[in-house]
Image (cartoon, rainbow, N blue to C red; front, top):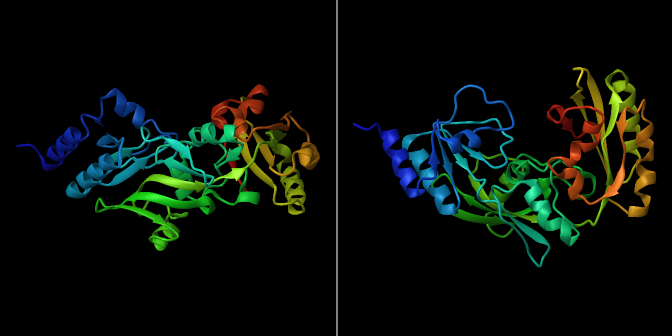
Length: 316
């Protein structure tokens, strides 16, 4: 006799036309290779969804068997529950005439910027192109534009959500405003967001860069950085963090971004070049997408000998 869970998963696999993977499958291995090192149990199965109907089927299966559920967008979360809804095939991005972008649930920041950047527009993203936009937004959305444009969640104007009962709802300020409010920073607890509508901003370029200082000077560097940031306009956002170098010693990363008048960029960021003993890096005028790409944000400090995998930035 086939156990109920196995029977349900087999049925789900049929509904998804075979796009259900289990341990041992190549696609399962790729889908569970998340950014954070997996700990504890691995998922029982992964549902590779392409449509809202696929998501509905996966939610129904999880509910029928009382399986813990998690959603994969960019793969930067750490949750790997019994059934994972993989949205990576749902990564379409389009820009409307009202300067908003419809961003599918599996789209990463790099997918969004590849569409908006040629138009001289920018969505409020995080600092790394590989991060999923849905997870970023539902968790808050810190990034290099928060001084001027707010968090990613502040720019979420509508969402298409599959609820726990399988119902699809479209929420906005005019329809189910309370659910829209909850989605803004409330995490993935209210349903599976299969598409979001984000406000875009006119932003042809920014002045930005990664600056590397010795960890031994961290206190002075951070204090000077805070002093400068206190008296700067909202067009400047400063991110700071730490990274382990090739010799296992930590360094301080300072990432200033100026998104105001282009002619003022270099002057506004010049003080950040003198926070201490500069080990590497610099600032330059560039498109917003360039430093946010999966490689661009660490290019300068990799040239200084620091491996890509050690980056760990945060926003003050």
